Image: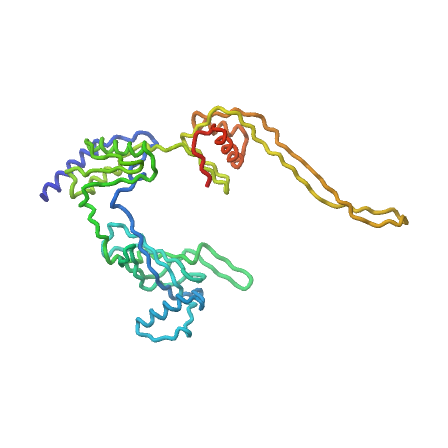
Length: 370
Protein backbone atom coordinates (compact mmCIF):
# COMPACT_ATOMS: atom_id res chain seq x y z
CA UNK A 1 0.00 0.00 0.00
CA UNK A 2 2.90 2.36 0.72
CA UNK A 3 4.22 1.86 -2.81
CA UNK A 4 0.78 2.58 -4.25
CA UNK A 5 0.56 5.96 -2.58
CA UNK A 6 4.15 6.84 -3.43
CA UNK A 7 4.00 6.11 -7.16
CA UNK A 8 0.47 6.23 -8.46
CA UNK A 9 -0.37 9.77 -7.31
CA UNK A 10 2.77 11.05 -9.05
CA UNK A 11 1.46 9.75 -12.38
CA UNK A 12 -1.92 11.31 -11.66
CA UNK A 13 -0.27 14.63 -10.85
CA UNK A 14 1.44 14.73 -14.25
CA UNK A 15 -1.84 13.92 -15.98
CA UNK A 16 -3.63 16.57 -13.94
CA UNK A 17 -1.03 19.21 -14.78
CA UNK A 18 -1.29 18.35 -18.47
CA UNK A 19 -5.07 18.76 -18.43
CA UNK A 20 -5.02 22.21 -16.81
CA UNK A 21 -5.78 24.66 -19.58
CA UNK A 22 -3.60 27.62 -20.43
CA UNK A 23 -4.68 31.05 -19.11
CA UNK A 24 -7.96 32.16 -20.66
CA UNK A 25 -7.11 35.87 -20.92
CA UNK A 26 -5.02 38.45 -19.16
CA UNK A 27 -7.87 38.76 -16.61
CA UNK A 28 -7.68 35.11 -15.54
CA UNK A 29 -6.91 34.47 -11.87
CA UNK A 30 -5.91 31.38 -9.91
CA UNK A 31 -8.36 29.53 -7.70
CA UNK A 32 -6.06 30.06 -4.71
CA UNK A 33 -6.61 33.83 -5.08
CA UNK A 34 -10.42 33.74 -4.96
CA UNK A 35 -11.21 30.80 -2.67
CA UNK A 36 -10.09 29.01 0.47
CA UNK A 37 -9.94 25.27 1.01
CA UNK A 38 -11.42 23.53 4.03
CA UNK A 39 -8.80 22.66 6.61
CA UNK A 40 -6.43 25.39 5.39
CA UNK A 41 -6.99 28.23 7.82
CA UNK A 42 -5.57 30.22 10.70
CA UNK A 43 -6.72 29.91 14.30
CA UNK A 44 -6.86 32.98 16.53
CA UNK A 45 -5.07 32.78 19.88
CA UNK A 46 -5.29 35.41 22.61
CA UNK A 47 -3.79 35.97 26.03
CA UNK A 48 -3.40 38.55 28.77
CA UNK A 49 0.08 39.51 29.94
CA UNK A 50 2.40 42.12 31.39
CA UNK A 51 5.06 44.20 29.65
CA UNK A 52 7.86 45.30 31.97
CA UNK A 53 10.95 47.49 31.63
CA UNK A 54 9.17 50.62 30.39
CA UNK A 55 10.75 54.01 30.97
CA UNK A 56 7.96 55.51 33.07
CA UNK A 57 5.41 55.15 30.25
CA UNK A 58 3.42 52.29 31.76
CA UNK A 59 -0.02 52.21 33.37
CA UNK A 60 -0.99 54.71 36.03
CA UNK A 61 -1.50 53.78 39.67
CA UNK A 62 -5.30 53.79 39.32
CA UNK A 63 -5.13 50.85 36.84
CA UNK A 64 -6.37 48.31 39.37
CA UNK A 65 -6.15 45.28 37.06
CA UNK A 66 -2.47 46.03 36.40
CA UNK A 67 -1.79 46.30 40.13
CA UNK A 68 -3.63 43.03 40.80
CA UNK A 69 -1.73 41.27 38.02
CA UNK A 70 1.60 42.43 39.42
CA UNK A 71 0.69 41.17 42.89
CA UNK A 72 -0.42 37.77 41.53
CA UNK A 73 2.74 37.41 39.45
CA UNK A 74 5.07 38.24 42.34
CA UNK A 75 3.19 36.03 44.79
CA UNK A 76 3.44 33.10 42.35
CA UNK A 77 7.20 33.67 42.42
CA UNK A 78 7.23 33.57 46.20
CA UNK A 79 7.52 37.34 46.72
CA UNK A 80 5.13 38.85 49.27
CA UNK A 81 4.19 42.44 48.40
CA UNK A 82 1.82 45.16 49.54
CA UNK A 83 -0.32 46.36 46.65
CA UNK A 84 -0.46 49.90 48.05
CA UNK A 85 3.31 50.20 47.79
CA UNK A 86 3.55 49.18 44.13
CA UNK A 87 4.19 51.79 41.43
CA UNK A 88 3.34 50.37 38.00
CA UNK A 89 4.76 53.20 35.87
CA UNK A 90 7.27 50.77 34.32
CA UNK A 91 4.66 48.02 33.76
CA UNK A 92 1.71 47.82 31.34
CA UNK A 93 -1.14 45.35 30.99
CA UNK A 94 -1.44 44.08 27.43
CA UNK A 95 -3.47 41.78 25.23
CA UNK A 96 -1.41 39.34 23.18
CA UNK A 97 -2.75 37.96 19.89
CA UNK A 98 -1.37 35.36 17.48
CA UNK A 99 -2.51 33.72 14.23
CA UNK A 100 -1.76 30.02 14.40
CA UNK A 101 -1.97 28.06 11.12
CA UNK A 102 -3.73 24.72 11.35
CA UNK A 103 -0.50 22.98 10.25
CA UNK A 104 1.58 24.38 13.14
CA UNK A 105 3.37 21.74 15.18
CA UNK A 106 4.86 21.95 18.70
CA UNK A 107 8.06 23.96 18.61
CA UNK A 108 7.04 26.19 15.70
CA UNK A 109 7.64 29.94 16.07
CA UNK A 110 4.83 32.43 15.47
CA UNK A 111 4.76 36.23 15.29
CA UNK A 112 3.09 38.01 18.19
CA UNK A 113 1.11 41.27 18.35
CA UNK A 114 1.04 43.07 21.72
CA UNK A 115 -1.52 45.83 22.42
CA UNK A 116 -1.83 48.04 25.49
CA UNK A 117 -4.91 47.38 27.57
CA UNK A 118 -4.61 50.18 30.13
CA UNK A 119 -3.51 53.82 29.96
CA UNK A 120 0.17 53.28 29.14
CA UNK A 121 1.54 55.94 26.79
CA UNK A 122 4.23 53.81 25.15
CA UNK A 123 5.49 50.21 25.06
CA UNK A 124 8.89 51.26 23.69
CA UNK A 125 11.71 49.22 25.22
CA UNK A 126 9.34 46.81 26.98
CA UNK A 127 9.66 43.06 27.45
CA UNK A 128 6.63 40.77 27.44
CA UNK A 129 6.66 38.27 30.28
CA UNK A 130 5.67 34.67 29.61
CA UNK A 131 2.04 34.71 28.46
CA UNK A 132 -0.10 31.62 27.74
CA UNK A 133 -2.14 31.93 24.54
CA UNK A 134 -5.52 30.21 24.38
CA UNK A 135 -7.86 29.20 21.60
CA UNK A 136 -11.64 29.50 21.49
CA UNK A 137 -11.88 26.16 23.28
CA UNK A 138 -9.99 27.53 26.31
CA UNK A 139 -6.92 25.34 25.81
CA UNK A 140 -3.38 26.77 25.80
CA UNK A 141 -1.73 26.28 22.40
CA UNK A 142 1.31 28.55 22.63
CA UNK A 143 3.47 30.60 24.99
CA UNK A 144 4.70 34.11 24.16
CA UNK A 145 7.62 36.06 25.58
CA UNK A 146 10.26 38.49 24.34
CA UNK A 147 11.31 42.06 23.60
CA UNK A 148 8.90 44.28 21.70
CA UNK A 149 9.60 46.01 18.39
CA UNK A 150 7.53 49.19 18.21
CA UNK A 151 8.50 50.89 14.94
CA UNK A 152 7.83 54.38 16.27
CA UNK A 153 8.54 56.80 19.08
CA UNK A 154 6.79 59.27 21.34
CA UNK A 155 8.46 62.12 23.24
CA UNK A 156 7.01 65.13 24.97
CA UNK A 157 7.97 68.06 27.15
CA UNK A 158 6.12 70.77 28.98
CA UNK A 159 5.22 72.73 25.86
CA UNK A 160 5.58 70.33 22.92
CA UNK A 161 5.42 66.68 21.92
CA UNK A 162 6.35 64.53 18.92
CA UNK A 163 5.13 61.08 17.91
CA UNK A 164 5.69 58.71 15.00
CA UNK A 165 3.34 55.79 14.42
CA UNK A 166 1.48 54.11 17.28
CA UNK A 167 3.62 53.34 20.33
CA UNK A 168 1.02 51.36 22.28
CA UNK A 169 1.11 48.40 19.87
CA UNK A 170 4.19 46.31 19.18
CA UNK A 171 5.22 42.98 17.67
CA UNK A 172 7.60 40.19 18.68
CA UNK A 173 8.81 38.36 15.54
CA UNK A 174 8.77 34.65 16.31
CA UNK A 175 7.88 35.48 19.90
CA UNK A 176 5.40 32.63 20.44
CA UNK A 177 6.30 28.96 20.65
CA UNK A 178 3.61 26.40 19.80
CA UNK A 179 3.10 23.95 22.65
CA UNK A 180 0.13 22.02 21.26
CA UNK A 181 -0.87 21.32 17.67
CA UNK A 182 -4.39 21.54 16.27
CA UNK A 183 -5.99 18.07 16.39
CA UNK A 184 -6.71 17.94 12.66
CA UNK A 185 -5.49 15.41 10.08
CA UNK A 186 -5.50 17.17 6.72
CA UNK A 187 -4.70 14.07 4.63
CA UNK A 188 -7.50 12.03 6.17
CA UNK A 189 -10.25 14.03 4.44
CA UNK A 190 -12.33 12.28 1.78
CA UNK A 191 -14.04 15.52 0.73
CA UNK A 192 -12.84 19.12 0.36
CA UNK A 193 -14.90 22.30 0.47
CA UNK A 194 -13.95 25.44 -1.43
CA UNK A 195 -15.36 28.67 0.00
CA UNK A 196 -15.39 31.49 -2.55
CA UNK A 197 -14.34 34.93 -1.34
CA UNK A 198 -17.13 36.60 -3.35
CA UNK A 199 -20.61 35.13 -3.74
CA UNK A 200 -21.36 34.75 -7.46
CA UNK A 201 -23.13 31.85 -9.18
CA UNK A 202 -21.22 32.23 -12.46
CA UNK A 203 -17.80 32.18 -10.82
CA UNK A 204 -18.64 29.31 -8.47
CA UNK A 205 -20.03 27.17 -11.29
CA UNK A 206 -16.98 27.98 -13.44
CA UNK A 207 -14.65 26.79 -10.66
CA UNK A 208 -16.50 23.47 -10.43
CA UNK A 209 -16.37 22.99 -14.20
CA UNK A 210 -12.66 23.81 -14.45
CA UNK A 211 -11.80 21.38 -11.65
CA UNK A 212 -13.80 18.61 -13.33
CA UNK A 213 -12.06 19.32 -16.65
CA UNK A 214 -8.68 19.09 -14.94
CA UNK A 215 -9.49 15.88 -13.07
CA UNK A 216 -11.30 14.26 -15.98
CA UNK A 217 -14.48 13.39 -14.08
CA UNK A 218 -17.43 14.70 -12.08
CA UNK A 219 -15.65 15.21 -8.77
CA UNK A 220 -16.68 18.82 -8.01
CA UNK A 221 -20.09 20.43 -7.80
CA UNK A 222 -21.35 23.84 -6.73
CA UNK A 223 -23.69 23.45 -3.76
CA UNK A 224 -24.64 27.13 -3.39
CA UNK A 225 -23.63 30.61 -4.52
CA UNK A 226 -20.21 30.49 -2.85
CA UNK A 227 -19.40 26.84 -2.10
CA UNK A 228 -17.88 24.04 -4.18
CA UNK A 229 -17.65 20.49 -2.80
CA UNK A 230 -14.90 18.23 -4.12
CA UNK A 231 -14.81 14.47 -3.71
CA UNK A 232 -11.21 13.32 -3.42
CA UNK A 233 -10.19 11.04 -6.33
CA UNK A 234 -9.08 7.59 -5.24
CA UNK A 235 -5.51 8.18 -6.48
CA UNK A 236 -5.07 11.04 -3.98
CA UNK A 237 -6.67 9.52 -0.88
CA UNK A 238 -4.25 9.98 1.99
CA UNK A 239 -1.98 12.24 -0.08
CA UNK A 240 -3.80 15.53 -0.73
CA UNK A 241 -0.84 17.88 -1.07
CA UNK A 242 -0.05 17.09 -4.76
CA UNK A 243 -3.75 17.45 -5.59
CA UNK A 244 -4.02 20.80 -3.78
CA UNK A 245 -0.85 22.11 -5.41
CA UNK A 246 -2.35 21.51 -8.85
CA UNK A 247 -5.92 22.61 -8.17
CA UNK A 248 -5.04 25.94 -6.57
CA UNK A 249 -3.19 27.02 -9.73
CA UNK A 250 -6.08 26.38 -12.12
CA UNK A 251 -7.00 29.72 -13.74
CA UNK A 252 -10.54 30.98 -14.29
CA UNK A 253 -12.29 34.18 -15.34
CA UNK A 254 -14.11 35.50 -12.24
CA UNK A 255 -17.42 37.26 -12.74
CA UNK A 256 -19.33 39.67 -10.51
CA UNK A 257 -22.43 41.81 -10.54
CA UNK A 258 -22.03 45.34 -11.90
CA UNK A 259 -21.25 47.71 -9.06
CA UNK A 260 -20.37 51.35 -8.52
CA UNK A 261 -18.62 52.21 -5.25
CA UNK A 262 -18.30 55.80 -4.06
CA UNK A 263 -16.50 57.16 -1.03
CA UNK A 264 -17.97 60.54 -0.14
CA UNK A 265 -15.26 61.25 2.42
CA UNK A 266 -12.51 61.34 -0.21
CA UNK A 267 -14.54 61.83 -3.39
CA UNK A 268 -13.40 58.47 -4.79
CA UNK A 269 -15.53 56.81 -7.50
CA UNK A 270 -14.90 53.21 -8.62
CA UNK A 271 -16.75 51.81 -11.64
CA UNK A 272 -16.87 48.07 -12.25
CA UNK A 273 -16.09 46.63 -15.67
CA UNK A 274 -19.72 45.64 -16.41
CA UNK A 275 -21.37 48.93 -15.38
CA UNK A 276 -23.70 50.22 -18.10
CA UNK A 277 -25.75 53.41 -18.57
CA UNK A 278 -28.78 53.68 -20.82
CA UNK A 279 -28.93 56.61 -23.22
CA UNK A 280 -29.84 59.64 -21.13
CA UNK A 281 -29.44 63.44 -21.22
CA UNK A 282 -27.66 65.01 -18.24
CA UNK A 283 -27.18 68.64 -17.20
CA UNK A 284 -25.25 69.31 -14.04
CA UNK A 285 -24.67 72.75 -12.53
CA UNK A 286 -24.64 74.57 -9.23
CA UNK A 287 -26.41 77.67 -8.00
CA UNK A 288 -24.41 79.56 -5.38
CA UNK A 289 -25.94 82.35 -3.29
CA UNK A 290 -23.74 84.40 -0.94
CA UNK A 291 -25.33 86.75 1.58
CA UNK A 292 -22.92 89.06 3.45
CA UNK A 293 -24.05 91.25 6.33
CA UNK A 294 -22.17 94.44 7.23
CA UNK A 295 -22.67 97.89 8.69
CA UNK A 296 -22.10 101.48 7.50
CA UNK A 297 -21.65 104.52 9.72
CA UNK A 298 -24.06 107.45 9.22
CA UNK A 299 -22.30 110.69 10.19
CA UNK A 300 -24.53 113.81 10.61
CA UNK A 301 -23.50 117.21 9.22
CA UNK A 302 -21.53 119.54 11.48
CA UNK A 303 -23.62 121.53 14.00
CA UNK A 304 -26.78 119.68 12.88
CA UNK A 305 -27.43 118.30 16.32
CA UNK A 306 -27.68 114.75 14.99
CA UNK A 307 -25.91 111.66 16.29
CA UNK A 308 -23.70 109.08 14.65
CA UNK A 309 -25.52 105.78 14.03
CA UNK A 310 -24.69 102.40 12.43
CA UNK A 311 -26.72 101.51 9.36
CA UNK A 312 -26.97 97.78 8.40
CA UNK A 313 -25.79 96.72 4.94
CA UNK A 314 -26.59 93.48 3.09
CA UNK A 315 -24.71 92.33 -0.01
CA UNK A 316 -26.20 89.50 -2.06
CA UNK A 317 -24.25 87.81 -4.85
CA UNK A 318 -25.47 84.91 -6.98
CA UNK A 319 -23.52 82.70 -9.35
CA UNK A 320 -24.98 79.90 -11.43
CA UNK A 321 -22.96 77.57 -13.63
CA UNK A 322 -24.16 77.40 -17.21
CA UNK A 323 -24.21 73.76 -18.23
CA UNK A 324 -25.80 72.33 -21.36
CA UNK A 325 -27.52 68.99 -21.71
CA UNK A 326 -25.11 66.19 -22.59
CA UNK A 327 -26.02 62.82 -24.00
CA UNK A 328 -24.40 60.09 -21.90
CA UNK A 329 -24.44 56.43 -22.88
CA UNK A 330 -22.10 53.62 -21.96
CA UNK A 331 -21.96 50.25 -23.70
CA UNK A 332 -18.40 49.73 -22.50
CA UNK A 333 -16.47 51.01 -19.51
CA UNK A 334 -14.36 53.31 -21.72
CA UNK A 335 -17.45 54.82 -23.34
CA UNK A 336 -19.00 55.34 -19.91
CA UNK A 337 -15.88 57.10 -18.57
CA UNK A 338 -15.64 59.28 -21.70
CA UNK A 339 -19.31 60.24 -21.40
CA UNK A 340 -19.02 61.24 -17.74
CA UNK A 341 -15.79 63.14 -18.40
CA UNK A 342 -17.56 65.12 -21.14
CA UNK A 343 -19.69 66.71 -18.44
CA UNK A 344 -16.57 68.33 -16.94
CA UNK A 345 -17.61 67.14 -13.48
CA UNK A 346 -15.36 66.71 -10.49
CA UNK A 347 -15.35 63.38 -8.60
CA UNK A 348 -17.77 64.81 -6.04
CA UNK A 349 -20.04 65.98 -8.88
CA UNK A 350 -19.92 62.45 -10.29
CA UNK A 351 -21.28 61.10 -7.03
CA UNK A 352 -24.36 63.31 -7.37
CA UNK A 353 -24.71 62.45 -11.06
CA UNK A 354 -24.47 58.70 -10.43
CA UNK A 355 -27.06 58.91 -7.67
CA UNK A 356 -29.41 60.79 -9.98
CA UNK A 357 -28.83 58.27 -12.77
CA UNK A 358 -29.65 55.44 -10.37
CA UNK A 359 -32.86 57.19 -9.28
CA UNK A 360 -33.80 57.68 -12.93
CA UNK A 361 -33.26 53.99 -13.69
CA UNK A 362 -30.51 54.70 -16.22
CA UNK A 363 -27.63 53.28 -14.18
CA UNK A 364 -27.60 49.49 -14.48
CA UNK A 365 -25.42 48.62 -11.50
CA UNK A 366 -25.58 48.44 -7.73
CA UNK A 367 -24.61 51.80 -6.19
CA UNK A 368 -22.73 51.37 -2.90
CA UNK A 369 -21.74 54.34 -0.76
CA UNK A 370 -19.00 53.74 1.83
